[in-house]
Amino acid sequence: MDIPAIDVETLADKLEAGSPVFDVRQPDEYEEAHAPGVTLVPLDQVPDRVDEFPTDGEVYVICKSGGRSAKAVEFLRQRNVDAVNVTGGTLAWIEAGKPVASGD
Image (tube, rainbow, N blue to C red; front, side, top):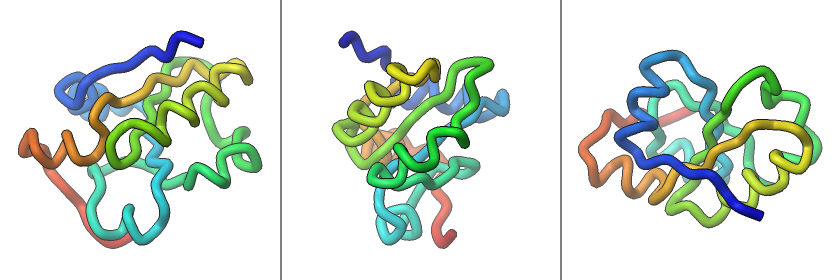
């Protein structure tokens, strides 16, 4: 399956525009550092929480470096969610000097 992807620069624009962004890392990783405004749904919970992902437009999925989010995107796209992977993940977000939140 072709996994659509965007970079963190594009993600910053999408977040600013109010687009839904989901972080599929574990809670401890999320609490340590995450992009402001993203929603935590750990990868192992995605199947049980698939109804939380909007189906009326693109949603963006981020993890640490892009691997887990790619798996989530593949799963979601098979369920009619227009999901897009964030290349490089949270590590790339931090390296690009984007704002970072911590805690839950």
